Figure (cartoon, helix red, strand yellow):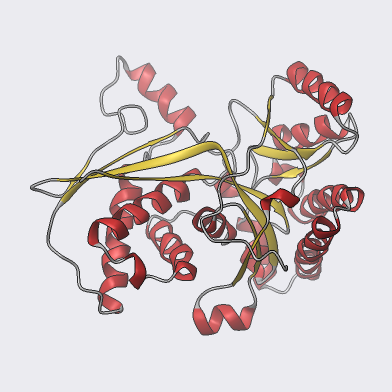
Length: 346
C-alpha cells in the first residue's frame, strides 16, 4: 500500500528566535507551501532523488554552477536518509519492534529554499509520518516527542534552526510554545499548546525570489548568549515575553497591540543581530511593509517576512504596489490544518 504524508511551511509569528534560548513563541503552519513524502513497498530500501532538487546531470559546467549558487549543494535525499536513521534509533531506544518489510521513499516540495519557512524540517516531518504508518508504530511515538526526533535528524546533517519549526509542523495550525528550561532538561520537550487558528487575522507573506541563507543568522548571537552578553540575554527575555503578550492579544482580538508586538519583535532582533547579519534584502522587505503602515517581522531567520495590515483592504493594496516596485512577492497566508485539537480554553 502506498503511503503519503504532507507537512507545511512554518511561519514564526511572535517570540522567535527565543525558542533556542529557553523562550516562548507563537507559530503556525501555512498551507501555501508544502513538502510531500511518498512511501511505497519495495524489495530493497530505496531513497529516490528528486529530479529538480537532487540533480546529478547538467547541460554544462555553467548550469551546474548556477544551480549550486541558487539552490546550494544539497537536496532532500540526505534528509530522508537521516530521518530513517534517527527513526530506527528512537525505536531501538524505546524497545519498539519493527518489521522487516522494505520500502522506497520519494519526496516533492514547493517550499522556497532559504526563505525561513522550514523547508528542510517539512520534508523530515512528512517522512517521519510515513515511517510511523509503514511500521504501524504511530501510537508508540508520543506526539510531543516527534519534533525532537525531527530536530535530531537535522542535527545529524549540521542544519541549524530554531526548536519551534518542527513543533508547528507536527501539531499543525497555530501553536503557543514554552521552551521552559526545566521542561526541556527533564523531558527533552517544551510545553506545547495548540490554539484556535480562527483567532488569527489575515496575514501576508512577503518573500524574495533569491533570498538570503537563513541558516547563518544565529551563529554570532548564540556565542554571545552563551558568554552572558547582557544585550542578548535581556533581548531574548523580552522577545519571549512578546509571545506571551501576543497570545493574550489574540484571545482578546486586540489587533492594535498585536501589530505593535510584531514590529517590536523585529526591532529587538535587529538590535541584537545588527544590519550586516540580517542582510540588506531582508531589512528592505520589512521596511517596504512598514512604508505603508503594515506591521512586519521575519517568518524565521530571513528570506521572508510575515505582514499584517490592520487598516484593511486599502492598506493591502498599497502593500502590494510597494512590493511590486521592489520585486518582492506578496500573497495571503493560509493557515494549515491542526493535527492536534486546539485547547480552546487557552
